Length: 202
Image 1: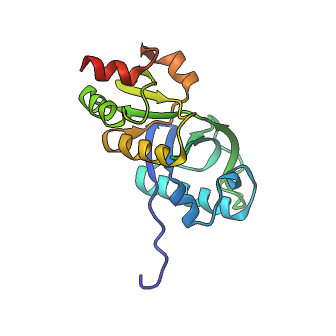
Image 2 (image 1 turned 90 degrees about the vertical axis):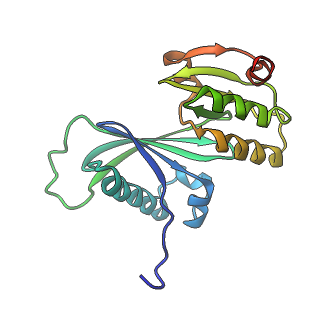
């Protein structure tokens, strides 16, 4: 495929039969000429991005995208966006119509917190030690057999924020759960200054 623009593959995973999670980095967006704010708007570029996401979801995960889909977009600081796509319960009765394969119902939320999930406690300890010179706060949750560290980057300079994300990414995965979900379904392990506590004890 000489000369064809190779679109970067987005990170996606299947959460359940009817739900997938897609992680878009800001690079994924900028390579497609999309600004963060565009995700809130009905424009062709965003439609193309959704089509591409759905194609990839179908090819990579076997996720069937016919019928109504609910799409939630979470904007994360310095990390990108998380898109959760949930299949509607009822299959569309008008599937013969070629017009629009999926109906999108998009809701958007902005999170000011940085959340990282660690499958292994040792990785969490390494991450905490790596970032403690940048930030010592944080709240630690246990959620779906992972440790999720939530950090409020309010007082960090942009450059330090990028560094924080880069360091955390070495040991964990950006988590797309909101604090509300963690509070309701997760278990809080350390309520305050989690990074300092972890470094002190381990």
